[in-house]
Structures are given as C-alpha cells and as structure tokens.
Length: 378
Image 1 (cartoon, rainbow, N blue to C red):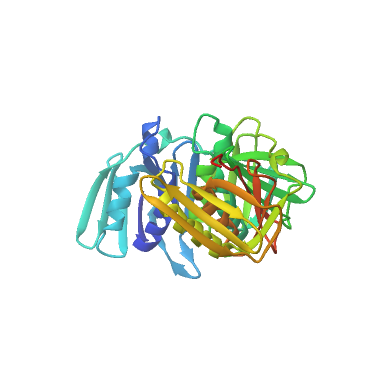
Image 2: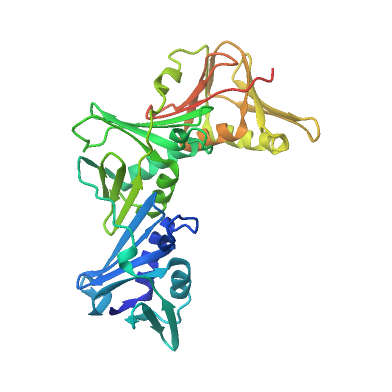
C-alpha cells in the first residue's frame, strides 16, 4: 500500500473514527484503526465492538485531488499513536507506505515515522445490516431528538435497558423516550419518511452521544437501517453502527399524568437561571434539592437551604398560575436539564400534588415533554 493524502482531510476522518476507539476492549486489535485504500479513496474503521464508525475520504472531490493512490492495500495502525502523529505532522502533504510486512512509513516534510502495523485480516468484519427497517431523518432533527432525550438515560448498569433511549415508530409518528426511573424525557415527531412496519428499539445512550458529535450541522437526510441487534446511521461520508439493547423497556405512558391540580406558565430561561442560583447552596448537600412554591398571585418562590452553608430565596414572576397552592421539592439538576431541553421557551409546568410526578412542556409545542419525580422534604 502506498498513497499520498492531504493532512487536514486525514485528520477530519480520524476525528470521527477516534470516537469509537476505547483502550478497554477485549480484542486487542480494536485499539487500532483499520485503513483500506483503493482507486476510489480511503476508508478508515474504528470500533469498540459496541460502536463501529467508518469514514470514507474520496480520491477526489469537486475536481480536486485529495488522495493520490500509487498502490492499493490495507493495514491496522495503533489508533492513539497514529492520530497523534498526524495531528503534529509539519506539512499538509502526507505520504504513507507499507514495507516488509506491516512496517508503515509516514512522511511529511522532513519528518519520517516508522510504525509497526497489524494484519488487517485479524480485524473483525463489519456488522451485516440489511434494510429490514429503513427510514431517514434530517440531521438537524436527529440532533434535536438526541439533545432533548439522551440526558435522561440511566447512568447505572443495574437496569441496562434504561441506559438507552427507546424509539417507537407507528401510525406515522416517532416517539423517543429516555428515563432513569426518577425522570423522563420524551420527544415526538412525524418524519416525512417512516418505516412501513411498526418498530420498537432501544439505542444505547452512549452511542447517541457519540453519533451527535459527528452529525453535520444541516438538514441533510441521515439514512437509518435497523436489524434485530444493530442500527446503522449513514451520512454522506460516515457509517455509524451501534448495537441495540435487548430487553423490555418499561411502559412509560402510564407515568404521564392526564390531569393537573396546579398549572404554572413561566419563562423557561428566567426559571432556569433562578434554579441555577438556588442550586449554588444546594450543591453542598449530596442530593442537590431545591424547593418551589406557589401561593396567590403570579409569583413563584424558589429556595434552597443548606444547614452548613446558608439559604437562598428568590421570587420569579410567572406569566400565569392557576389551581391549588403548592409546595414541592425536586432535584435542581433534573429541573435544569429539563428546562435546557425545552430551550428557553415559555414553559408550562403541570403539578398533580407535592408527591406526584410533574410534567414540563413548551407552551407553543407539545412535541417535547419532560417529567420529574419530586423529593419528600416538606
């Protein structure tokens, strides 16, 4: 294998592939990146066996030559070392050549590195994902769905299914739900292109977080292919494979209350800032609890009390308050995560009592719903 490539193109591809590389893998060769070069261009593959990312750099783009292929071939190189070398090469012209088995020469300007590669035949074969179920979502919508749900997955491995986001497609609608059993985030959407058959899958939260980093900032369609154990997301030059979680996701629809006793409409940004300030003292406490109370009128009181540190009280002007007076306590972190997902819009918060789950949603948009379980302090 022998070729020349532009360093910035190589680095862009490496940045994507490195997101799938982990040093904690059972198969040692997975600490490496597989590089394949043919007349069409160069493919790099990285995997930790849960996530696999392939990126393709074409030999030419828009008439400009990106790769000069002298001899085709493939190799596996140590991912961390190779990416650090490429990052620090002195010029944009890079020459890579394999000699004497797996000895790999990397030249740029007056620098020359010799890396010992591995046999590419030992690298695991890519998952075979046929389009049993396939549909597409615009990249910007996909980024929104991930941002509005993935923070609510469980960080505990005691119930592995809750470390993922459930996607359910039926009747022309896609519902994406995450819960750690203390809170819930749901995003509804009706994409133009939906799978023809009903579909229910659970995608690991970690996979979605890594996918989010490589999705383009535009509305280009991302093709999604699903089989029993794998999902594949295809962008213009990147293939992102993830395993799916096995098991039964809990029926979360039963958690969402259909009625409320108190309703508060408030500017999301001003409430977020008030809770952020109140949490400055609550942070000293292990559970980070903030109290929230309404009484007559359109003023909400947000407060926090830490015996060791002090206390804080702040009045927040609401747009509207209806129903019964209420005193409730909750995790400041959970509330701030939920408000950030709704992203500064006017928010309606519906309460059904001091110890019942309450929901937050945008006044103008029913597609995003956040649910939080309160904490007993009163």
